[in-house]
Image 1 (tube, rainbow, N blue to C red):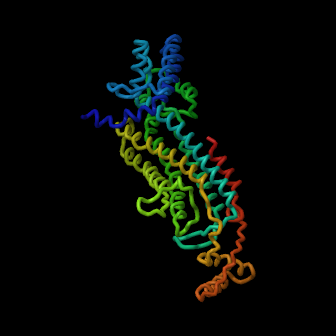
Image 2: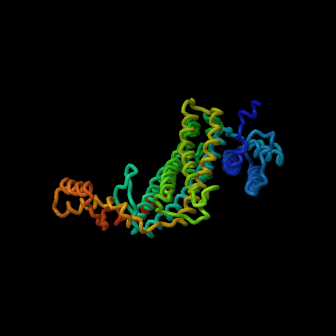
Image 3: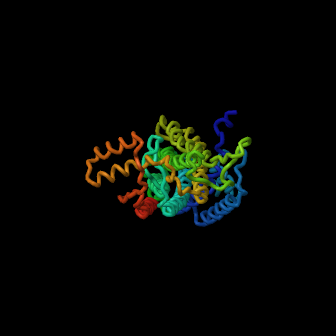
Length: 416
C-alpha cells in the first residue's frame, strides 16, 4: 500500500527517461575510466552493454521489471546480470539524485528542440497565410465591439509574431536546462576526483551547474522554466483557438474549414462545430496551469532532494505531449482554413470606417477633435456615409505587415 502510494505513476513515466539514462551512463563511465576507476577493457565491455540496452529501448523491448524500483536500477541490474561485479561499478561517483537530474535535463533539452521545430512549422504556415490574404479586410474589435478595419494578413501575422516572442521564452528555458548536474551526487559532491568538465563535453551541455547544491536546486527550476515557456506558447494558441471558434460561428462566418475538420450535432443537421479548436483551447488552459502546479510543489522545499520532486514528472511530461499535439493540430487545421473575402461589403460594418473618416478630415486640415465631433454627429443622426478605402502605411499596419522583419525576429530567437 505504501509503495503503491509513493511510487504512483513514476514507473511508467520513467520509461521516457530510459534512453537518456543510458546516454548519461555512457558519458559517466568514460569519465570513470579517465580517473582510473575503470579499466579500458571494463569501459569497452560496459559501453557495449549500454549500447545493447539502448537498442532494446529504441526497439521497444526494454521493460522496467515489477520488482525493480526505477529506471536507473533497471539499467544497472541488466549490466550486473550480464557482466557480474563489473556492472556494479557503473554507479561509482554518482547518486540517483544527479542521475535523474541529468536524465531529466537531457530529456527536456530534446523536447525543447522538438518544441522549437513545431513552433517554426506553425510560424511558417501563419506567415504564408498572412501574405496570401494580406489584402482581405476583416473587422477589428475592442471590448467585443466593432472597432476599426483589420485584415486577415494582419490577423495571421499577429499570431506569427506572437510565436516569435514565445520562442524567446523557449530559448531561455533551453539555456537554463542545458547545464550539466552530473557529479553533484546527492547534492554535496563526491570524494572521487570526478572530471565534471569531461562529462559536460561528452553530453554536449553548454556549461556546468558548478555549485553542487545549486545543481540540486535546479530540479524544479528547470521544469518550471519549461512549463513557463510552454505556457506562453499555449496562451498564443489559446487565443488563436478562441478567435477561430468565434469566427466560425454563423453570426460571423469569417472563416470555415472542410467538413472532415468539424463535427456535427446529434439532433441539429445544420451544425458545424469547432471541436478541434475547443479542445485545443481547453488543452492550452491545462498547459498554462502546469507552471502553477510546479510552483506549488517546489515553493516550500528546503535545498536538497525531496521525494516531492518525483511528482513533477506527473505534471510536466503530459503537458509536453499536449503542447506537441496542439501545435501539430493547429498547423494541420490552418493549412485547410478558408477565409471569406466579402465580409466588409455588409452595411453592418459601415461604422468600422469612422476612424478612417476622422483621420481623412484631420489630414485635410481640421483639428482632430473637430473632425471627431463632426463624424460623431453624422453617426448619431444616421447621416454617416462609409468610405471603405483604407490607407495604413506605418510599420506593422494593414498596408505594411513587416512580415520580413517578423521573420528576422524569429530567426534570431530560434538560434539555440
